[in-house]
Image 1 (cartoon, rainbow, N blue to C red):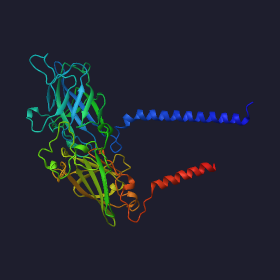
Image 2: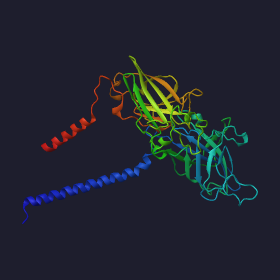
Image 3: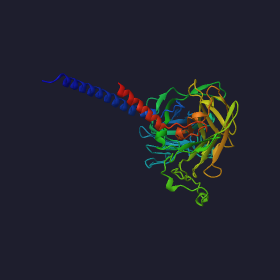
Image 4: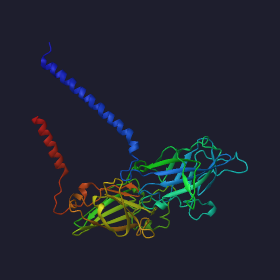
Length: 456
């Protein structure tokens, strides 16, 4: 006969197993939910929640075997531009369409057009790849907002330069709203990986105003394609890092070691070596492979934040951006910083500045960028490969402090990619403040939990 204590143990065992089973099911459900949501969350930028690139196709006329469309690429991202060598746009035709001609852009390949006699199409590929034309092309090849070598500014930096456009004449296609088939499987390089494009969707036709603004006309048909950026898709490692220093501590906190991966360490160039001054070292490669200066962090870009001076009602920060890539200069670069005191910027001395307020109640993010024709071009690695400025900020007496690394930014982005910051325990600290050992805190926490467990 089984004793009551034995039955109690069996019941307790079964109860524990049921609880563990329920907990495991909950954990598994959360893991599945995480992986389901990850692809959608990866393209979400909390500092620019509505940022995207919208590609609009406006059918402006029907032809005997197709249509003529004006294609407009609008960069609605606040601080992520498309730099040189520019954008590359691709798609797949739904049927057997061809491109008869293009104005303001061109395909990279023509394909096999041998079945056509007389007029030969511009491109016969099922999956055409289109690039912008270079500046200075003849006028009969130009279209509005074209011919900038694919360089497109960020909307927050320069709205007038955040658009690129071209015209395409499509043949062997539908000749009405009911028979035309939308292109599919759009791809966008800007100039590298990172963008994911959704399907083309028919939207209300675009309305145009005549030059005298007295008459409205509209496209015969319009469809949009929306592309969003994900840094996780662009590269497995960061593309920039951040270092810190301050007037109140002689210690300089460098970028973390191998912050951007050390896969290029065997091919790097030592500063001031013969190779660094070799002819042709700054010539870009077709695959845009970088040639980096040898550093412990191996990042193409380093952002340095220096807390420079402290006044009664103000404090001053110096920001320096250094390029360590010998094969890349950055046109129309942008630098975004998140810090609670950016709501009280008094003066920026050598950069242009614009506050970013994605959420109306919070004003802690700002964008720095170069002044036109002065420092809007960040040169290749070398003596000229840096830009710098100083920022004067008014103190908020309720929140301002130099303790616990408060004076350093929470996030930093360069050209739309988040930079790797040093670990918080490595920040420059006030000389009279004691550093707390995290291991000690952890040990105290574990001891307290053990004590509570024993007492209960």
